[in-house]
Amino acid sequence: FDTRGDCQLTENYPFTNSFTGTIRKTADNNADQAQFFNNNGDTTGGVWDNEGTIEVLVGTIRVTTTASGGSFKDVSSPQVVGTELTGGTWIANPTGANNAIIDLEPAEPNGIVTIGTNATVSLSGSTGRFVQLTNFLAQIDGSLTLNSGQVLDAANDVTVSSTGTLAGNGGTIIGNITVQSGGTLSPGDGAADEGTLTVTGDLTLEGDVNIDISGDHLATGQDSISVSGAV
Image (cartoon, rainbow, N blue to C red; front, side, top):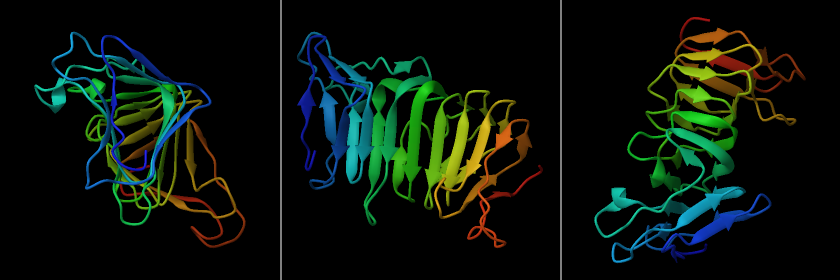
C-alpha cells in the first residue's frame, strides 16, 4: 500500500496473507489508513488471515469492526482468539518522524493480553504502535521486540513464559517483568551494535539473558538492561 488502498471483505470472503507473504504500507494519504473492512449494508463481514508479515513504515493498517462505528460490520481474524494474538509477524517501524500504526480491531474491546507462541511483534521508534497492546499486555509466549525509542506501557505485570522472548535495542517497557525458567530476555539487536533494553519497574529473572560483549563500555561495547525498580 502506498496510499489508502482499502480492501473490502464481505460475506465471509477470506483474505489470506500466507506464511511467505508480506503486506507493507510505505506511504500515507492525508493521514488516512489503509484498511480491510466491510460495510454495514452487507450481510456478514469477511475473514482476514495473517499467517505472514504485516509491516507498517508510514501511516496505519487497520482491520475494522463495529468498533469503528455503525457504518462497518465485523471483519474477523483467526489470529485473534479471545485476548491472545496467536500468530503472524507484526512490524511497526516508522520512517523518519512518521507514524506507523497497526490497528487490529478484532481484538477490541479487551485488547491483546497474550502474545502467543507463534506470534512475533516488533515495534520501533516513538511513533510505532500496535494499538491493542498498549495498556493490555500481560504475557509473552512468543516474541516482543522494542527498538529505537519505543515505549510500551503494558499497564500490567508482564510474564515472559518458558517459550517467550522479550528483546530490544533502545526500547522501554513500563511494568513489572518476570522472566520464567526457559524464557529469554535479550537486550541489543543481536548484531555488531550493542544496546540497552529498559524496564521501568521491577525485574524478576528466572530464565535466560542473552548479552553480547565486545568491549568494556555499556551500550557501546556490551548489551545492557536498565531497571528502575528491584532486581
